[in-house]
Length: 100
Image (cartoon, rainbow, N blue to C red; front, side, top):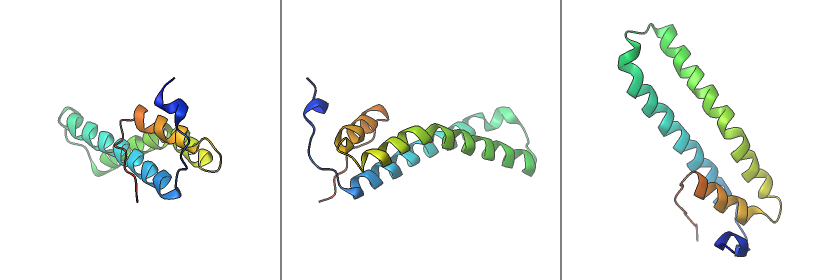
């Protein structure tokens, strides 16, 4: 059995909220970093083209975040919150931050 099997402590709404914010920040950091990384290969982009790249990358991130964010939000209403929170933290390598 893993530590996840024994996780049964209650999870506060603030812990879920922190995880949601951390998850979004993690994805946003990757998005910005990758745009910056390929910016030189894209050449001179017009304002419209730069906006299109930005819009496309935001849309991709939003789609990718839908499932884990929904899982956390739904779990907070049930008894699987601790398991779901720990799973998301491990999968996305989020630092565990507990508010006391």
